[in-house]
Image 1 (cartoon, helix red, strand yellow):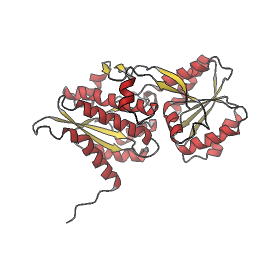
Image 2 (tube, rainbow, N blue to C red):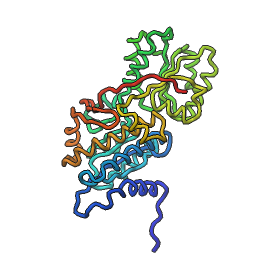
Image 3 (cartoon, rainbow, N blue to C red):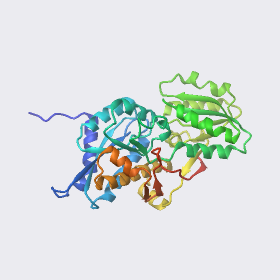
Image 4 (cartoon, one colour):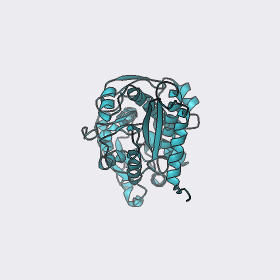
Length: 359
């Protein structure tokens, strides 16, 4: 009988499993082997970020080799969608012995979707999820932490930079659902800069973009803050921008800046974005030279997530609640970002950013 054929996704998952496990294949048979899961967007809209996270995690596993019990990394591709996340979660849960997961990549709506596919027995440390997306339901998501800097850090820097501008009418442009946390954070930050959020748009690849972006023409918004990653909505924003005689000031949140670059639209939609500071920039640039600076932050966040999770796992904390208690309030000294401490919200303390031109 011929062996069963694997579909493309199964082959990919098998490759990632073997690739991430091979460095530890020489471990002795009686050595304790710990398993860490991964839920990363390796295809689809967020693959630029997911691939950077995979590289960061893989480098962390290489650095951990020979230092304590061996670790296995079992990665599933969430395909940048709710459906993909559900399938990836089911496949991951079928692997016995996984107590903690690096992920999911990016999508805040994925965090909400996780509640419906069952997360109770696992602990999640996401390299990219902004904890603001689920902070209003802390008990439901108490086992979801993040090594990403909070989105408020970037919004506060953007509004601080706009305080002395004569532009005061802001359009917030997001992607997907839910986006209400993003809008609320912006509305909270705007009054401190004496600014008003006059329009909030949610765009997707499936949206009627002609209709959805009309408020950009009607509201006279003279500042755009963009958190959009998909190519089609970004191209439509370029079209709207070109139609305006009075060009707005454009500010990008980090993922959208990388997406604009990747789509080749930076020259047509000029703006500024928040660049993270690293305590060891040489380490970051040498390890992740093939990525842009936004992707490097994701790679570093994934690297830190693996290194941080390895500590409680190797100390015998192999259930979600035990891992959570170990991380809460504890300070970790990371290679690229220096000291990192988890707050009770599940996020890390604010990072340092600076605004730079996209081009």
